[in-house]
Length: 304
Image (cartoon, rainbow, N blue to C red; front, side, top):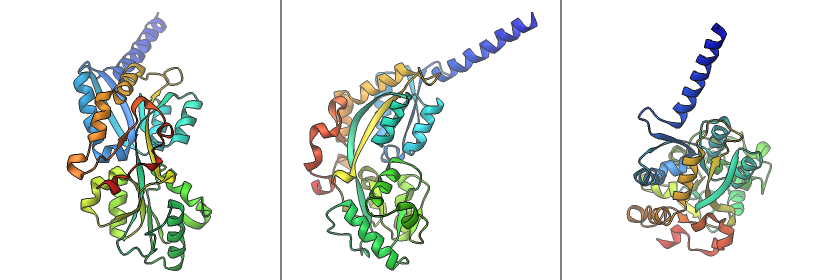
């Protein structure tokens, strides 16, 4: 008899825990979003969250920011219902492994290669990100005291893109990482920009965060467009058939909202008033940017 009651108690605890994840203490439905620091640092996601909660007052959106790698791990562990990230290869792997349902691109911008105004590596005028990194590498190896590079070093989407560019010219692990001139912040984009500014170093940043921080730092952009620097943000609902306790319904409502005319307008206008240019461009319909042939567009820097 005692075993029977113990089983009932255990079942009740499990049900209570499941209810806690789906409903907050105020009775609202909870939507847990894990995202990148760039969307958090720019303030865009806060605006989107407010607009979404106005439309769906019974849903409480709870956002945790970190690098894309952290977001994907949170999704695998069941600590998030929805991921908003920017690393297509890892996103597709996440879905192929059954953790995500579908990838929905909704906005894009570009990574910028930025650095000190005196440009000790002479990257100004480079035709591509690879050429700029090659110049930084050669100059840093020759004069590591004056030519430095600050990396996020946090397995984020930005860090992954940086490594990909280094690998176009050298063995990243043996030539770059661990070098005296190469500094890993282990932090988000905003903190990395501040550290690069303090060190008078080069770095790579998503354009949105750079534009949001540029009035507080002295670093300037040198390469601001090109296929190597295209930066696409996507939303992925975590698959409840693979991960228990996730709120697929609320996640899909948020994705639907991201792709709606209302939210796409909000995204396309975000930053115009404060920075003179939008921090993000939109992708109506959730289609991959290659379908829009956007490579020839005017970059945010050129538009100002």
